[in-house]
Figure 1 (cartoon, one colour):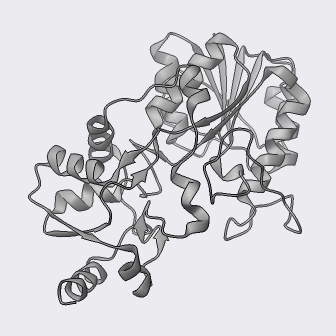
Figure 2 (cartoon, one colour; figure 1 turned 60 degrees about the vertical axis):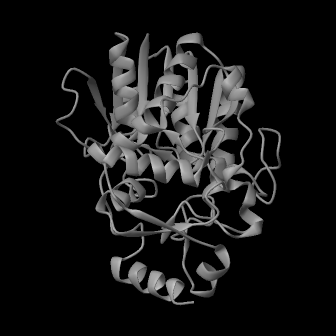
Figure 3 (spheres, helix red, strand yellow; figure 1 turned 90 degrees about the vertical axis):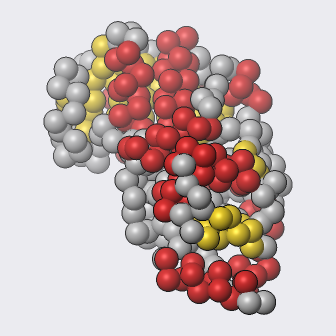
Length: 322
């Protein structure tokens, strides 16, 4: 299979390259040439800019295209039109495309609407991210019809994750000591290992399968996640389970300051996406221990995610002294 990846070889792009090359596929990257240019020297590189320079794509045909870097509809529409002769267009959208997360979301749930937000750029706070993804999806379907494959991942984790949202936890538990953990331990959290996501998308491209799919795991308990982190790292960390009420009273930030944690009832469905359609289409998940190990070995730590150690210590002291 001849496969084109729109975007650079980082995180999702790297996992796609590994999956495609392992199967002997002929792979091409199209990007500006700035991201990890030394990786995958055996892969064809086409240089261009989705905003104003698609010349390298014109007149070429691939069996499948996977778009990992589409965020604004005019750029996605132009790319799709330039590649209209290709077999399948797989657009990596987001679970953020849904309008309401107060309940579980499936592929038929209402989608986010743009409203008065700009259509040509992402807002600094990403407030129009989901609605722009919806318009990007429409742009792909308008060009490719039944040959459009739309994948809506949840939180993507694993090797080379630049966000730190998942990576914080294996590394924090490995550091040991008292670890502030969001109670209750049986509460579910959803994410998908980038390697599982990439392998599955390449499977669908191999099969020429169109359609729309949520793509995340059915859910893992916080207790199972953090105990797995402790087991893989060999840490003697003590998990201190702290309830939402205390965390909110102390203005702990959801999503990033305490990564993956959500207390807002309006977002209760963000870790409860329905994924039966993807499971029926072959999405499978490696052992949680392997995902944790990948985050420990290959993911990049960032100060943008996770409790500052002094802040965590102060919160734990206040909780223990209550």
